[in-house]
Image 1 (cartoon, rainbow, N blue to C red):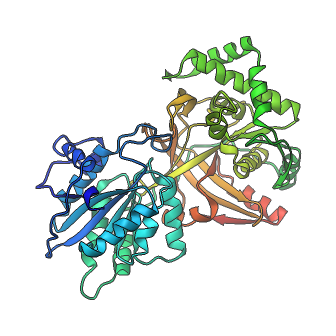
Image 2 (spheres, rainbow, N blue to C red):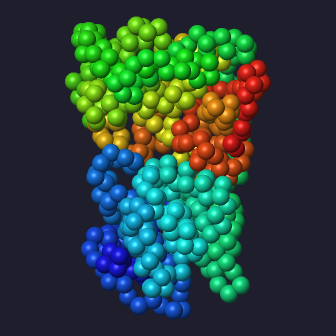
Image 3 (cartoon, rainbow, N blue to C red):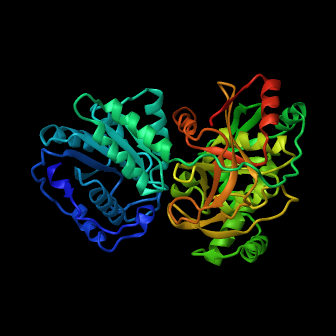
Length: 519
């Protein structure tokens, strides 16, 4: 690993730590060091030696994943390196990259002979398993989320560390580089009479001290009407989910009393091919006219997306179902379907039906439960991100309705862009209403559990990285507690507008389930 390492120091620069990812001309040149071999220099025994490990596929992202295909990590890593060196001169930093466990093991072995005292692991892509190997060293490890890049793995892996009480790992989930610096300073506690667990405890104190307190939860008036638990149960029984995950078809059990049926990619694709071309053009024209902007998406792509919407609607009608969930990326990349369903899902959800991403049946059932309970309000699946700097949880996905108060409610603005991870097809950035209370849920069938938290919608984040729609909410309750469930429940959550906490508890009581509040 020696030839892949970079030692970095900085005599100081005027970098804005809150906005350090936007660039620093004095330090961006450091990016070149990450791309060429640099020998380790002798460690300064008067200073702790910290290895910064970037967990990612490659310096330039080769395929679709968060943040997006082609993303250039080198300038980002260079700016992080410069900020650490400039703000923490009491430490010596050595920089490396690792794709997974094998490279992490080599880094760990090399560290035994090169005087490494601790590790900073940046999760740059979501699922690269690097931090686990370094955490097993017993040395102090600071685990940092590169937001809208590694956030899924960061949340899942951090929850695992918390559940297993891995005492030597501290973590940072913040858009503010000053919060990272404050946590790095905690390496100072590791010395005579201190331990790696003292370091992790110090990072917790630094993080909670710097996290803002909960703001006003006073929200805009919302004329939400819910139904009784009995009526909700009946509506769910009358629902039906179609699951298109491969070429199989036939009955597929039930979730929360909602029957599920498998439909093949071939059936969905045939419905797309047979969609009326004139109708598809009319739908595409309407979408284009209604959108605030269309960026990087051709009229032809809009028309193929509209044909997919019409095809999905035809399949729903044929099977007398009101929800469809598609393994969209698997189907598209495998050549089984030939248009992204994102805009179609957007339209179905606006109409009181359910279109759900990634063939996530659990989340699809959650969406149907929400719609049944709230007289038809839509919801949307998201890949959440937590930002302690703003005390926010951000619900990010490339699909969202723009009629969050129901088919007959007001419409909010939306833009049409490519699907973010691969910059292909067409998807939606919905600029969702602010100032309202939202409820976020997820169900687990075997355990008969409903996970829930509430949050006030406060911001739409326009960041180009990761998924297009990014609704930020300030959670009601303890944001620290929000870090604890991702390893057990997975990354997806389902969000709707309105405070439905009491109706959800009533429904759970009626069907013998348990509600778990994750904040």
